[in-house]
Length: 432
Image (cartoon, rainbow, N blue to C red; front, top):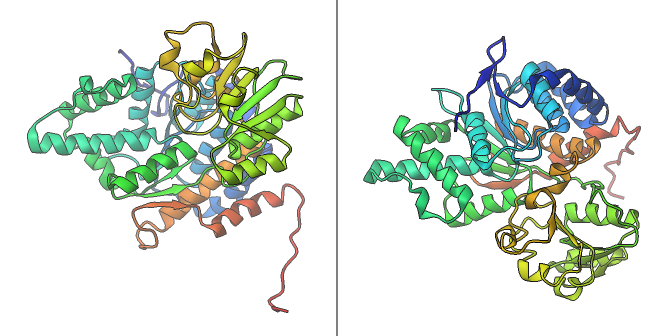
């Protein structure tokens, strides 16, 4: 695979689809800034003190217009940034071009192959001989995963001389990861150890990535970094469901977490009859209190017109389910990875419409979330990154996974209030 890093006239590295789209990207970024008050308030409050001065931040997160506002908030606070998308379909090429030209090193384009995707991830982590990033903004955990797998492989190589074997796994994507690590070992057998030694912490955007981190923490493979769950701790807004006529259709939403709630509300508002599947009794009760039916997938698989998986888990809709669906049923996913839907099984069962090849269809087929929704989520990221960087030497956080503390969540909310014209009532200290 012959991919070459390009450079701007100022020497900034990048690889995007079309730099001629940068002006269009800049216009859309300026429009989005108006609808992202939390990030703009961060620039106003923290920009003068340059709290990220000297910090290297790598991002692996959908390279959209809204993400561009996040990137330029980090750079406005003093950081140097390298970025890739966390999804092969989600990049908005004009956003990538504008950021590559104006603000940060970007390696992302819509329609990457899996090999190109992991090449981009490796480039975003490659800060040269001095190690990797100080901080990572991750979405789904792939950048964090690559470093962990790299460190593990380097340790085995140092002890035994054994290189990673891509043939040791049936997972096509993990074969690519092992190939990248294997080839890197030959050039620098301490590459990922250098990254580990420099890395202060990770803020993770999505539930799937957080589950990965907790799993690593539980089995003892999470190495010495602090990880903070910083995504979607404020309510997720209404999100696009599908670009089809859905009034009167029966829609099944698998999972009623933040994303599922937004999807169910959007479908209901568009006139669909929404049914929720759930494993959690609290989420199920919340759905019922919103007037939605809660049934199992098996109860409704032959009746529904639209199926949306939102769980962040795997094997939610399998080929055996699809065989029972009515003609012209649409199956799609807005969980992070493509394994909520049985994509492998679909190779032997044609005739099902699956949007975005089983990946995030709201980003693969549309433009993601509204700017204000992402202002809430991305302000969490900025505050989490500030906290990790500020406390890097204080001992306040152990090397484990944390949820964004409540007082920081309140700060995120407060940063949005002025733009919305809110005035908070002050509580007296009199206990009554």
